[in-house]
Image (tube, rainbow, N blue to C red; front, side, top):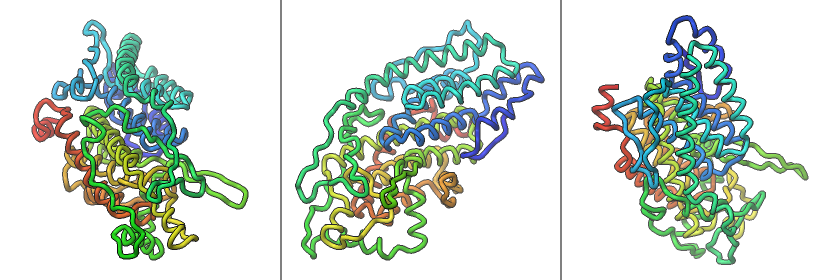
Length: 455
């Protein structure tokens, strides 16, 4: 059976090594293919490509969710305690069933569906091809019959097409031609920030079809604090909280801010030279936490798919709800106001992202993801978060998923890029999204507690 390995290692190499020699007894391929490490390796490859291609956080959430749904929809045909998401997710129709006359392995079919849908949503398709081809070559070196392999791939392809037909109607393609945001002179409205003064990212993301939410504006937070530069105003107090926190950061606060930065593109300017560093998105960090949790809990292949699928649904809808508010309130970032009225030389610890301030995306999506993971793995799930190690950051320990989500939220104050209301209201908005997903998307035919006893 495939050996366990840590997230961030060269997964394909290790899979290749452990697949060697697996043809010693008839049917052993089935044990190889039902090991969840195949799923983890596929998700990690998708993450690596998302980082390489520099997708924005909202777009990355879309790239994560659809491949996982495709894999999940394949697997429900083998696990009778689980049910399809057809009719539960907006616009998702009944999925094609496997042909009972054809012998196949649905774990392999699910991996193929995942990789096929993932490839269709990225830029660097050749990177996915290389991963897939090496993986499949190794699988074919086991004792898997050629017809079983071919039938599995065929069904995975059929499911991928079904999902991609659905994906095509989510309004993403149409939104690529929508007009860019035009910067307005209103003093309270968002303006591009240094060092690159990038245009606003995804001002029409609220028009993307939601998955579980009824609409993008189902959970509209209360409006942000009114812009008012009078020194006794609430807004000015919130502004100075950002500034004073930033100039008095402790070592722990600095570490927290950097750990949760998750900026997919940070530009660095040295004189006339400019270079950039690339990292995972905020959603990618929570996908990494999902990997850690499922491995620590010894989740089987189906449970692993369920966790990735439900978490990414929460992330996807969380970004839509958050972006709906961002581009309604269009609130100016602290950096712009502080530089204009308080300290022209002040620079936040973290690079300000290129979109409006309210609500905090980290706060929303972290709490949506934490809601799902808490439901699946419990309120007192302690874990060692190693997600950022490959980006040079030390791991952190958490006693629960909500403890992590709350730290992710407050990290944005430490980083100097959010006022407190964006954080507190973002937490509320994220938990509303997470609760709605859990109440309206059911993966188990029985209750989750009953299913846990049987698994």
